Image (tube, rainbow, N blue to C red):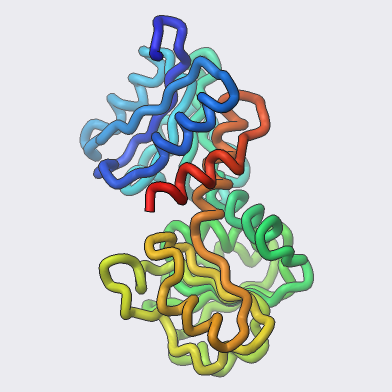
Amino acid sequence: MITSTTRLTGLFGHPVIHSKSPQMHNAAFHHMGLDFAYLAFDVSPERLADAVQGIRAMGLRGVNVTIPHKVEVMRFLDRISPEAKLIGAVNTIVNENGVLTGYNTDGIGYLRSLREEVGLKLEDTTVLILGAGGAARAISAQMALVPVKKLLIANRTWEHAKKIAEHLRHLMEVRAIHLDEVPDVVPEIDLLVNTTSLGMYPNLDQVPIHTKGIRQGMVVSDLIYNPRETRLLKEAKQKGAIIHNGIGMFVYQGAEAFTLWTGLPAPVDVMRQTVESCF
């Protein structure tokens, strides 16, 4: 039950009707016995500044930020974490007595899901990322901070991949490649990550690349979690690859936000069960 002492958190996005974050976080708060609540707020771009000021005015503990606000929101905040600065986007805001700090838990959450679910030692891993959007940028930055053994980024528009590669070159050498080069590099890849929406419901027959070069033992990861097994993952599994879907990233990025707001370890198992029950 929400009372006058309940600490409010939430989600700023446009639209937000599809989000499973309220179910996940409210289940976590309930499990931990915390007087917290999580609400989804549909914030149009022209009202974003007002919404951020509302965090201060109404004393919200913090919010998650999703499409289309992750970049634009940064200019309305008081502080930005080093990781969020490197990525160039914020997905979590924490309110400390009116001082708003922006964080990005996407990359951290993704790497944690890989370590927990697949057991990859990233320092020894050659990685190919498909796509050059916000998720690709967050994951690439976190991979470069490790750093991984080798990092390649492939995108339909090569210039977008090149921009990310150049942004991270002070941390490690990152190579941008064209999509038609992917078959040539797949044999040397240990981890293939699809950050594009190809294969997401309802376009279940789409794949971001031809799976011919995928081999037994390599890890194929798809950030999509609806469906849980995309066509890419199904074909990779048939070839003996280890497959990994996007539920873990969603859960662990949420777990990192939970800890930022509460100061407590997140009940990851409860959060995962809640998300999986939504599909």
